[in-house]
Image 1 (spheres, one colour):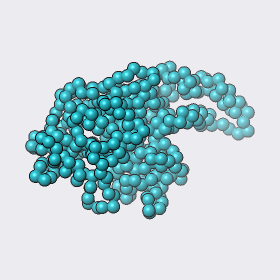
Image 2 (cartoon, one colour; image 1 turned 90 degrees about the vertical axis):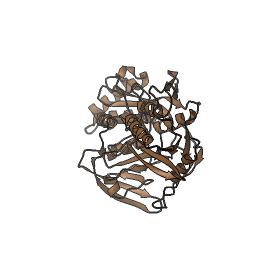
Image 3 (cartoon, one colour; image 1 turned 45 degrees about the vertical axis):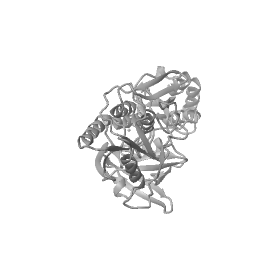
Length: 411
């Protein structure tokens, strides 16, 4: 799935176990400025840094009197053997469920390790990105030449069950965790496609190579329009994108389309670096605001690489870091935003490592665009609304409109 991590802000997803999700190893999304991830990844600190109520539960039987007493009584007197680890996990999940925050989640040691690998660009899974929509987790992208692509999985397919366990109502991080696994192992996924019913697909997990950046040039109405797409805000994304943009500029383009459709986010540090490609050093990127932290505005810290007129193309799959970048470019009067309303994931999360090797990722603040727009509820509304029609093969209506809009921008 996707999505690609610290006490820093991350912009995130579901409740309970894992992250935003790239089932290519799995995943999720966060703000990474000093350790924060936009859309989902962490930094490590001690359990003593956690809020007292959370800390007491996560410390387990030796740290919480009630949990210790209940588990001890069951362990000593229940009529059959008690799985203590299962009870401890259930108590943590119940605690987090009580927050009613789908973006706060506990990651067990294996899930936390997978998240860290994802952040470093190491992916094992089936090759698709997912996001939560209502009670369903929906496929938002499928990478080429992957198990998911070869099995005919498509964007907007709903994930109903994994290995026979229902995923309806589960957080997308939980779904991603269930699908990812060791290379060469198999996973059975039930998909539901609108108008086509359910189907079970058995996929063999593999190492997934995700191309972060792709680019080309199109001629539109006599103008040379560069096109560049960013898949996720993973480590090194801003550097790759900067080089691709410089190459396009060297080929004398008149305008640029920056495609963030289906991009679930990633590291905040990369989001800041991406905005810095297109705006002067010191330009505002995002403001972080929360009850237990001072209001802080993050700014670009690198030299601008291009001043070419540009359009940013977004859709419902554009989340967290994608929304930060789109909002920053628009509010800095740098880009026209074209497409459909974005996902609406504008919450900052901190990830704290626990003494058992797992981690707690919890919401600590929200982020605002430079003009103070909070997109956490309704997403970012584009300047020009246009959607791709999935029923027209070989035609991308949203991209065609974005290219035309770019060709008409003042030079």
